Length: 365
Image 1 (cartoon, one colour):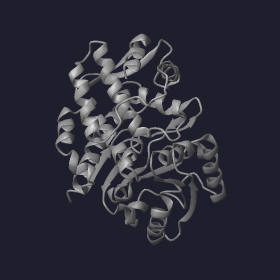
Image 2 (cartoon, one colour):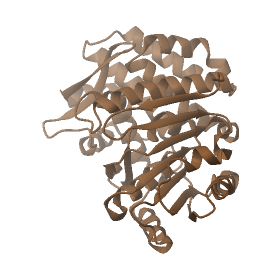
Image 3 (cartoon, rainbow, N blue to C red):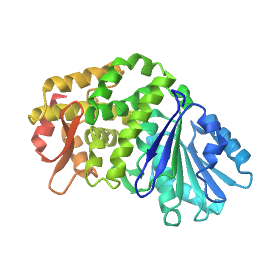
């Protein structure tokens, strides 16, 4: 196998494979293999569709001429991940005449993957979804594990379902058209896996930062495969986030609050908000006596090296952020719950965290 081609097998009740490598969006046999029926709806956004939708459709038609293919394109960005746009995907499935053996193909970043996956989960109580992630963030995070959702004004991902994909096909060539900011945002989620599970990986990311930021195909494929292997191992043991899977939310409680308070507009994107959230979670760990302040600052330094933000954006009230956290789906009736760490590569879920400590960390930031 080429250094830039990898396959990660996800076992469990609904097993599937994650294929990683360059040129996969032109591989008609690979794209068509997971499709079981006569209908496929390709869902994409206004940025990705002009680049890749025709290529994917042509590859599918060449491999399965009898396939009825529909297209549905929405606007780009987190602000488009709404119940209204979800409804338009459902309407597109209805117009296609999609049957129980139809497939939704999610071609794009995390917004498309989440929304198209949720539509697949709901159409006729569940049809297949194939994830074709085109951003690094989606390749290592949202396309794997079966979480699907849309946002509402009160918070991120509050309406959704668990719906594992039938396959994930991550074409690393797509990363060459990714804006540098989006590449860095995806690397934030890659760094997360080192922070919570794999200290050796964190050291590897430190040693290979320049190559990864430059878009080296081999290094990116290795980073994606290692990240997906970690997420796959966790999600197959805990598919519905009743235990260990919550570790994947390191930095996300703070990050989602920042995103929601900024209104999913022109502020930090998801990966950037998670980068800030990881620094805050590490500092909260230190404030609670769980970990050293030095480890928190080392993580901050690494994120800065990757060109990621590490401070709470100006103008956001700590009190407003805590109010957002109370509505976060990771919160519990008894209080705020965070993923915190003891050191690099060792994290755990901590419930009933004192809000005063959280406010102290936010005010300091």
